[in-house]
View 1 (tube, rainbow, N blue to C red):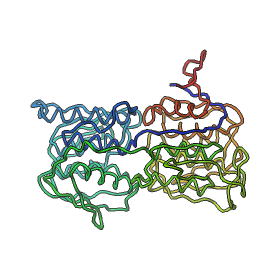
View 2 (cartoon, rainbow, N blue to C red):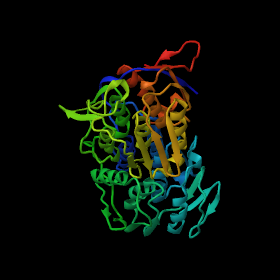
View 3 (cartoon, rainbow, N blue to C red):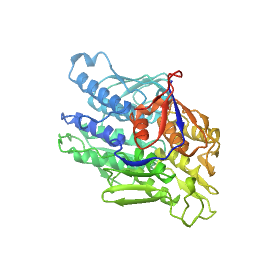
View 4 (tube, rainbow, N blue to C red):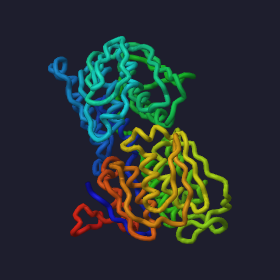
Length: 451
């Protein structure tokens, strides 16, 4: 496992963040189902998660055209990507392709029980380590490998909205391919709703429509995805948040190519960082982030928060779970302020237990964070000490702690630095291009600057 050695610095300059990982997953699947070309532009760095979706959907469609598919399940390796797994399970079932889904890291332990509950009653047999869920049966177990057989039948699909919006997205992608109409009914409020809106918007771009109802969605059957060579995947607001936070914490960062009217829910980071005191403004098409203007409590580097007061900052993270690590990192450096992040319990089931990972990481570097049942409570300090923190093989934890380390008094060492390849392979290169001082200590005898 690689480690990153980070020295205190400021990030300043212009940057174009990667394409949206969430949008890319959806576009790659829709384009493949349409028989069209890969929607990602040539020359763009591709994360491990997107590579997993590309490979798995290609294998799935190849198996659909092979006679042997009816006898031997096709192996679909999802890597560590929850999106790949949860999007493609119902798609494979809709195509009638027997498949065995595999993965690594924490993915084999992440829940798929929602599908084990609803797919068997619609003609799909599911087998996992937890046992077999025959048609009409119920098996709450999850886990990989997962083997599915049978062709998905249309009808009414009831599922909880509070587990993961990825299950809704998977069904939305699959159900238009069936011969009859279907209905998705949520039995509890939907979390991460903007991601489902993004799914519907991408599907429309590829010629498939769904209708929102009071309790879920109506999905017409017999539809066909159509190629859309003009479709463009927008830039990633989740990744932009790390550099906006770096600007807020004493830097001056301008991001190129961001969509101010994006359907991505993580666009909310702009308003959230402003609540924390950042100056974030659109200037000639660039999104610029700096520390707050003089007039309030001090931020690292001597800048001040405008109009700061001792009231806690309370953030409901139910719709923006991916922002929690970077919001926690920024909150750790708001001296005299307490930030409470709530409704984020699902983060315990990600690549790591992100609530525990961020609390432990912030505290290891000299901050003050504690876990709550559904989130984090963070008391801001003037700066961190530095030291050693565990990345927990989680890309968002590593990137968030790397941002917090910018203002530390001494060097910081982060474990599992290679995990950024999952979503942002060039993160440390871009970090250094803006003035960061991050070194790869995978070879302790001769650490190299990330390039």
